[in-house]
Image (cartoon, rainbow, N blue to C red; front, side):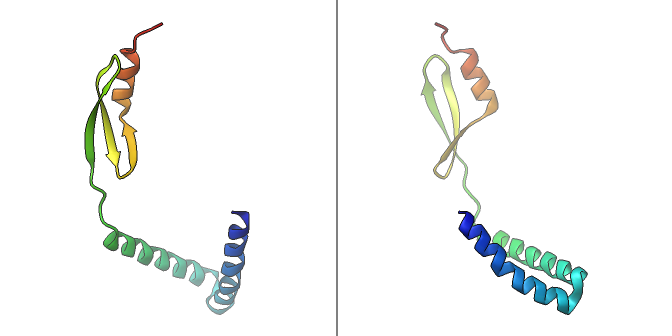
Length: 91
């Protein structure tokens, strides 16, 4: 992982130094800001929205525990988690 980070730093340094000498530091930051905005626009236009799929599971001693699924990841809302913990049988 560290090697890839160092490789990224090395490959970014040479073009940045060339652009810095050619257009100055303000021009370099303006160019990077435009490139970031273009990349964000491309991601916004090309990446599809994730569909929310809510499901309900039966939890022991808590009734229905609402679980939200985003793709392969599963999340429990804070309110549901609090209710689950409060209704857990003690001992």
